[in-house]
Each structure stands twice: as structure tokens, then as C-alpha cells.
Image 1 (spheres, rainbow, N blue to C red):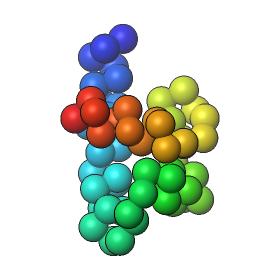
Image 2: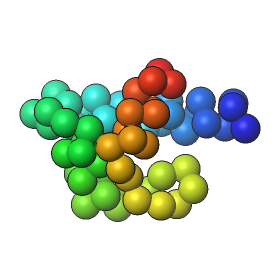
Image 3: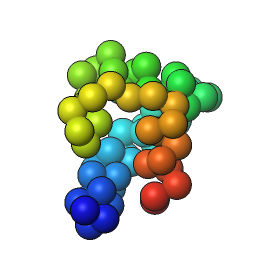
Image 4: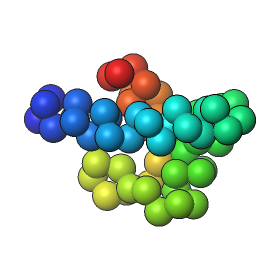
Amino acid sequence: MTASADRFAANVLPIIREEQNAGATSLREIAEVLNAHGVVTARGGQWHAKSINNILERS
């Protein structure tokens, strides 16, 4: 499970970094953008600030 989570985080991290570079200043903003673009979490759900934080901590 950890390897799977690591792979998922590695795939999503570039999208998160791209949003940060585009001017998203909060975890909540990044979550809103991912949700608006139809990017789902590893379990197929919606993004929240905490889930973005978890990805960033994993990286």
C-alpha cells in the first residue's frame, strides 16, 4: 500500500507544483483547482487541503 501511495503521489505532485507556480497560494486553492479539472484522489474522491498536504509531505 505504501508503494502504491508513493506512486500516486509522484504522479500528482507535478500537477500540484504546476498550480503553485501558476499562483495558487493555499492548499485549499490547489484542491479546488484539482477538483475543477476532474483530477480524483487515489480513492476516487474529492481533494481537500489535508489531502494536498499529505501528498506534499510524502514527496
